[in-house]
Length: 192
Image (cartoon, rainbow, N blue to C red; front, side):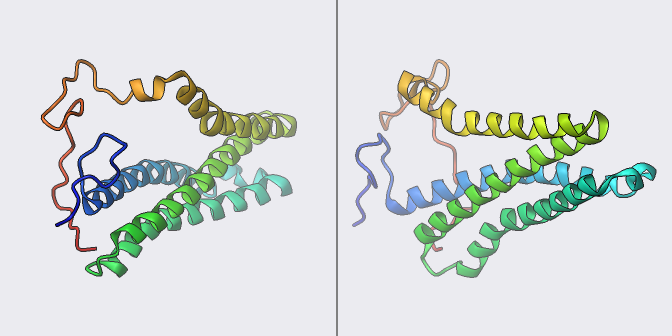
């Protein structure tokens, strides 16, 4: 018989398979968000090449543009990699390993998407305002990413607001002793 609580200290009552399924669903949701941003920025970059003023880009702007197109392609590939990994390993009862590798691929994808967002913004400022503005935007964009990814989470955890934000407004404890309701996991197989 499988133990009902995969990690007794987190307040959830779930098996290791249920936890792997839940974590996989969360990874897929996060990939959907990142993929949308990748598609928007990639589409923007592709559209630029077909504009009459594209030939006005100087050597630096053209090099930056090509790097950004490469990053958009890499982000798209990284965003699809966890899905192909899941397909390749489906039915082999390796969900925990798939979740661990999927998480690494997701984090790599987020780093690439962040670099892409900062680079696209820099390219636009460089072209519209000037080189100095483009370079400043790289610094400001990098600072924003670092702040949002490293500083904000640490401050939130220290202040205790991270745990308060997990509770639904007005949520009552359910039969499992947790607040709010659990999302359904229909269509998810524990076979992988």
